[in-house]
Image (cartoon, rainbow, N blue to C red):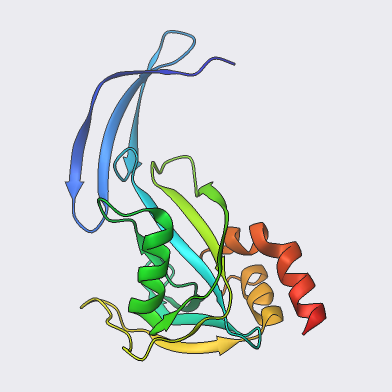
Length: 182
């Protein structure tokens, strides 16, 4: 299979909380195809499975507008200019939950779906403790911080109770091993 060739620059269609771009491609058969794509090329997000010293998972419980449901989310968000994905994940952990991490390991990078340019970087953090500075949520965040078991996190991923299920997949063997040791 041969990759399609993009023709011209992406056209910005919507510049809100999410950006939507129109891109034109020439397919292998010579036909042109237009696609509406979420987010700017090269944009990144990061999230973290944050574990306390006693292997509880710190979650950011919040309402999500798309599915119109409350999810037990992993702390995370957009990677800012000049910031690494790891720095973003740790910043979001503290901003959303008021916790800071001890040791951190990279789990991997994921593209959520075929119509989004943003990549998502996932981490697992150990020995997370309250920072003493509290959380500093954005003006449109309404987060309830809680701690759940590893088995509840896995159950949430299986049963549409969270959005970053890819992180659980990337960390699955590690999480099962930690659960057995606890």
